Amino acid sequence: MTTTTDLIKITPRTATTQNYPRLAFCSAITPATSEHYSHLREAGIDTASICLGLSGYNHYKFSVIHTNLARQAGMTTHAFYVTDLNEITDDLYQLSNRFCKLGYSAQSKITIWVTSNRYIKDKEERINELIDLISRWHNRELIDVAFYKRDIDAGMYNLSKLPKMINLTIINCNALSAGIVEAGTWIYTTNMGDDTQVLAYDYYGYYTDHSGYQLSLVDTDYIVQKGDTWLSIARRHGIPVNDLMSLNRAADIAENLFEGQVVRIA
Image (cartoon, rainbow, N blue to C red; front, top):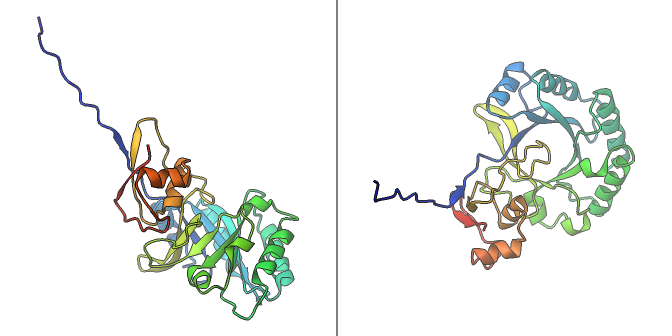
């Protein structure tokens, strides 16, 4: 007869995650070879946003080249257009024309990549107008805007004047985070090995449609990943940001988190 019992120690599971899903932004600076796209796939990147043009350029052959290469590699393709906001009707024509000719779908995301142009005074109005014009033929929820963090820091753009539903892509390369708490996607580098390649972390799967980490009933802790903020963690786990900060005795939403830090989520 057994007089002792085995004691099973149950410890809370730590919510560790893989890296956030990533995507590639491909343009004239991207190597135009099938080998490069194979390397992207091998790195676990299966989504690419292809540049369909730039303000002032009536022809942009790389839109065709990279769209074909990405699709031949079996990647999901979205589209972006680089605008200086000078002539948004011309931008709209070039974007819509190439978007249709290249067979992008009704589910494809369109990113308005805004360049640094200090000479345009009504920037937010023009961005909103461009979004309105695109939404006449494409789902408004599938339209995103990308800004350089340095331009926001310099006061060139007021995010509060833009639509609230946009994902918001922030370009802030070689930094520790996107640097803007509202960011849904962070473009963090222009390099992949020896190649020039713009890469981004897609926090909420806006482009990649990957749900990433899923919270279970026994998860109590979360391991901070590169680029995390209090807001991004709260949004990922469906927790009010104020509750998350109170749980972790954090006083300031701008407080920096470091990679590997343990954050309580329950």
